[in-house]
Length: 380
Image 1: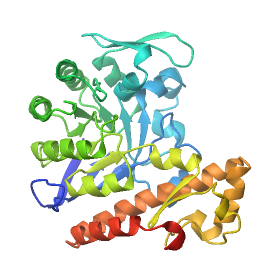
Image 2 (image 1 turned 60 degrees about the vertical axis):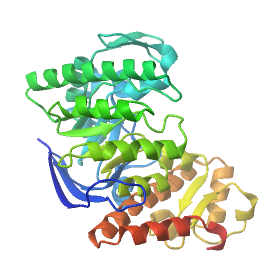
Image 3 (image 1 turned 90 degrees about the horizontal axis):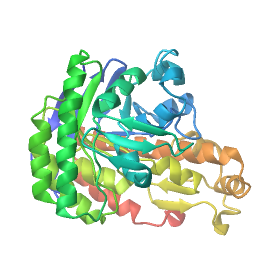
Image 4 (image 1 turned 180 degrees about the vertical axis):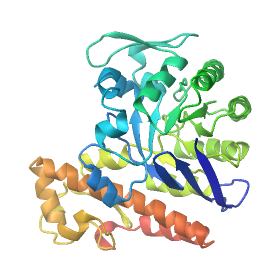
């Protein structure tokens, strides 16, 4: 069973205040220092990089997706292989999403009912069904350290009635999934998900209902679904203080480096997003002093690393000119080297956030971070 220790907790939230928390999550596959960012390995692979690359970047936990792994390679492959950890040779903690976000993003292929979600595979059109109980069963076969309840994620914009319907369904499914998890012996750890869209009163209601269920941790879902950044911050700032202080708080699917710093300051413990790996494959590289679009012609003869303050393998060995050449030539090495840098940047940023919280200088760190990021990387 998961344990969560808090070493620092500065109390109630507020975007301009220092409410960042420092903690440690202990699971069967190891410990996780929080706040933490989780690289996304949707189908059991963080695209473009190996286990050794992830270790180099400082990954403590990665994320897999129940929907995708269920469809391919399938439980009939993963189960006899000894679960997902052994199948992908990852010996550290792992979290799996329930598939709720995929049903949102692939809405044309999914139909929500009281019993669960009927959907067609995006791969071959075959028909399938997820109930909250089945989502738990699949994740138990995967063997993830942290499993997520099946939820109904509502996009933006959405009416209050639509959002309320999704909230009610999410609560009902959370209760069913939790009861099933208990019947199965509380194997691994199941988190509940708070919904409520962009309505504060519905967020409050969802927190009340979901946290009344004895989950080991809780997530905020339904953010970063098309709403303006300031609205996302408003919803997070409203919701986080309502959640239990003695359990992990996870905001799903977020986000930019600026999001991670701001939301850590509000008291969030866990994040995930495809942005560092996806942007890497599209030639966008994050640096302490702003972002670089490596395909730009101005890097053709640039002999500097991506970021001369970065300790990643890519920055220690390769120039911007070479990385531009690889990207323009569509060489596969481009995706690996770019992804290593972006993941290292994200995970190093989280380590800096933890250090700042530990030293009681988070607000100073936050001010310097935003000042640095507003510079131009080419002239830093």
